[in-house]
Image 1 (cartoon, rainbow, N blue to C red):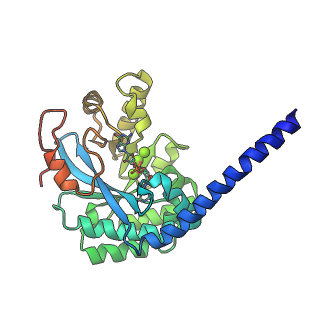
Image 2: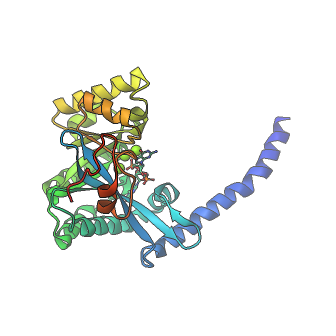
Length: 283
Ligand code: C2E
Ligand code: MG
Ligand code: MG
Ligand code: MG
C-alpha cells in the first residue's frame, strides 16, 4: 500500500513541482528585465514616535508592477531574487532609489531600507551605499538599514564588520522582526544595533495575551538598558497602540498608523488616527 501511495503521490506531485520550478525560473528571467523596464517601485510606510506623536520616518518596501500579474509584493519575488543572486543588483536599485527619493523629504524624516543576508554578504555593498549617499546628497544620519537575525547568523564576522562600516558612514542599524528567528541575546551585545523592531507576532497579541505583553515589555526594558530604541511592528488596533505607549515602546508602525503607499507624505497628512488627531506628520 505504501508503495502504491508513493507512486500515486509521485505521479501527482511531480508535474506540480515542475510547474513551480518553471514559474520561479520565469519570474527570475522577468525580474532581470524589470529593473531596466521601470517596473519596480517603492512604497513607504510611516513610523510613529510614541513620545511626540509625530512621524519620524518611513520604511521603503519594494513592489513590482508586473505587466501581466499586476502589483507583486516581496513575498512573490524577494526570495527568488535572494536565491539567484539577483538581489544584489535589485538591492542596489532599491538603495539608490530610496535615498534619492527621500533626500527631498523634510529633514527630520528617516528612511528605512531593508537589506537581505546576501546583500550584506556582498563585497560591493558598502561602496554602493557610500556612492548612493553621495549622489543623493541625503544626510547619512537620516538613513537606517534593517537587517534580520539571518544576517547575524550567516557569516557573522564578515557581516559584523560590514554593519560597523555602515555605521561609520553615519547610518543607523535596526534589527528587524526581532523574536521570530533564532534570537540570541548575544547578538545584542556583539552587533551595533541602534534599534530593535519587535515582530508583529508579539504585537498582535499584546492586548489579549499576557505572554505576548510580557515579552514586549521585556524586550523594551532590555533595549532601553542597552541604549537601543524599539519599534513595534504590525500595529493594527488603537488598543495595541495605547498598550505600547503604556509599556514605553519608542516607536510604532502598522496599518493603524499608515499602510505602505507610493506617496507617503500625502497619505500621512490626510489620515485620521486613533487618538483623534488628523495629522501625525509635520510636512
Ligand atoms: P518587513 O521588513 O518586516 O516589512 C514589514 C511587512 O509587514 C511589510 O510587508 C508591510 O507591508 C507589512 N505590514 C506593515 N504593517 C502591517 C500591519 O499592520 N499588518 C500586517 N498584516 N502587515 C503589515 P511587505 O511589504 O509585503 O514586505 C515583506 C518583507 O519583504 C519585509 O518584511 C522585508 O523582509 C522584505 N522586503 C520588503 N522590501 C524589501 C526590500 O526593498 N529589500 C529587501 N531585501 N527586502 C524587502
Ligand atoms: Mg523591515
Ligand atoms: Mg519587519
Ligand atoms: Mg516583520
